[in-house]
Image 1 (cartoon, rainbow, N blue to C red):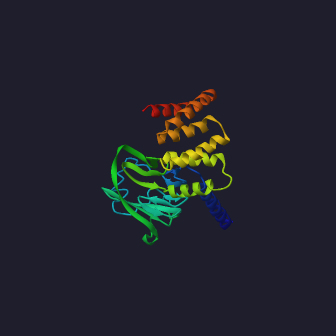
Image 2: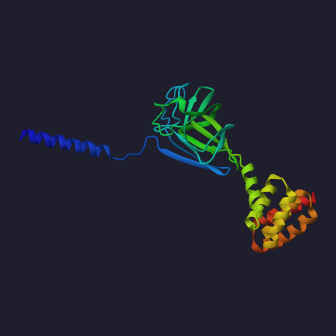
Image 3: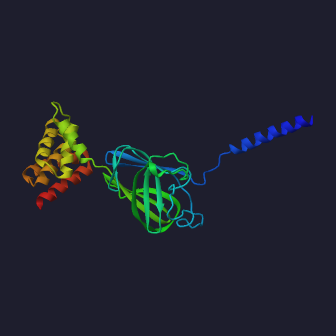
Length: 281
């Protein structure tokens, strides 16, 4: 009887411990995911956010000169949906472990093929695909919870900034898209049947880059042939104005302005005003 009671006690104890282990509580270092479009691709970063909690971080909790997981818990990962350039270095599409080695003045940033590691305990330098150094800097104020953000964003580049305590480090990611876009424009505009959207996008891209404006004007006029809307006239107007060809720009801007006012499109009214101002100069 005593043996039976002992077995029941042990079973109940195991069940009790097991149940206790399954209780969900908030993570001390919450997980976070940030993503950003860059060029024609997307960059996604998964990491955990530790807090300072009054502790000294760099040079103490995070020792100088040692490989760090760049966060808490699992190694921080960074994923590129397509090939990119990281701080001037080509990197293939894929997901990488983002390790760093902080010092008092600079950080070594490491992309490693192991993006599943728990911490940096099993870090293997042989799996590195890229290493580079960046200068660290002081933050304007205390960063209680570590953060990784995208800053300095434009259509083809962004800075990735790691901040914690009173320190930040940043590096650049970019995607070279011009060659790819130019090849696509050449292919699609040379087909027997070309859509309005293709002509518009091709002409606008050349306009934005300030290249091959004669060809851009031909394509813009083809848009008007198929659709006499204010946005079509405005495309011709701004391409011609950039050429300095105000004899073409002004009548198209006037027609666009008339139609844009009827449509109540303030953005295009402003674009036409810009053409008028440009031609007055």
